[in-house]
Length: 336
Image (cartoon, rainbow, N blue to C red; front, side, top):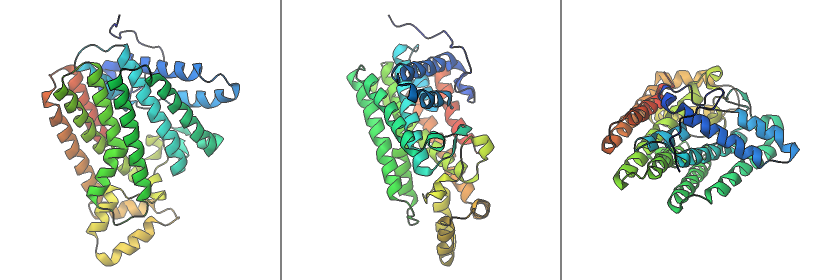
């Protein structure tokens, strides 16, 4: 028999940085505990213990499982299935971060050294693969529709990452192409989370699509904001190494705006700066600010949040719906 989740898990609550997650704190604690048990149960080799423990201690904002849970709660009490799928979603996210830190040479994540920094790139890649393999194992027991959504979401995220890598140093990349890439890379993940939560709660088809669209639009805003933080974020507040995207020559919205705004003769100079190996962060931030590129990117992110909120029109009014809207606003308020 499925019962509402009402028992908190002791310890520091995941997602505590997000006020709108307070109503799902017990469920997020259950998600964290599910991940801990899953990884501990299937890593009997003593030599793996340190890596697994390091991964388990890295509890971030848990945005994606939070979207699963809030989307589900829009249509009724949360059940065990919501917790299980939310845990799988966060494990997929863990795996992508492990791989991203190798690609971007990230040295800090959530305020602590990354796995690749401590144990090397091979260990980080293989640990990511190990986590994904546990998701595959768990997904085999899900209903067909749910496992299909989970698989499709993972595929779209990987496709988006590949498309971004192929656009390295392509300073001719336009805004529509950039938005297409982040819609696959990041926004499709949030879209899948909204869809999963609604499907698990047996929402109507139109309502499922509304949650999926909400996730897509909010996810686009999230990635635009994340790119801004990589440019102008405070490492001590972010908990990760900033400017990683520029170190790997990936065009972002603020840079795209700058390159189409400045005079043609100066574009080559800016492109050379972007590809430079020296520390150019303060110089770049000043240039982006002077040409209105930081403001433009923030305004575009805010516009997507407005669209995301409007997408929930077909979802019944409830505290969970309001929490979703507050969560979407949090995604762009991080640059304030």
